[in-house]
Image (cartoon, rainbow, N blue to C red; front, side, top):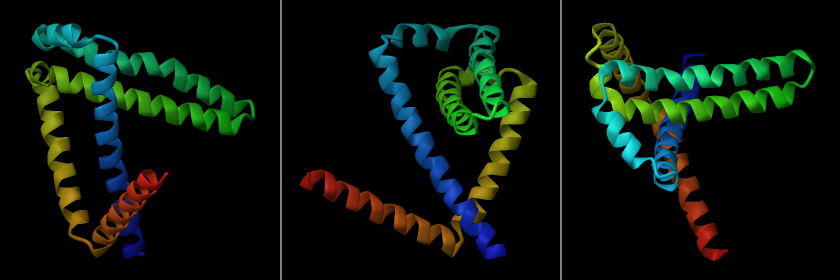
Length: 158
């Protein structure tokens, strides 16, 4: 049972790392495409209160979409509700990670935020260290590299 749990956690960790990397890259591209660099530079220099508002805004914007997904599920449109919820979660993660990257310094001036951030970062570091030390994690990483190589071959051939 422990091995199964560690394998699932390893897969989730790799998926999280991959998603974070892809969403960060997408956020960078969208920022350029939407000509947001000047706004982001302004936000990076804004007061901590404005930074906090910018950080919390994506959560508030996504809330009605999540409620809509719940409404879909409650009306029997389960697949549509789940898809909408997943898309909302991905979009929210993209926005929050982008806002955090831009406003991190200002956000950490709030004592409560700093305490929460340090606690979560420590716990995640500990968990990642434990999972990365497992054979399951190494096997999943090897599988990921193999899949990436096969995909690259397929794209070159096609």
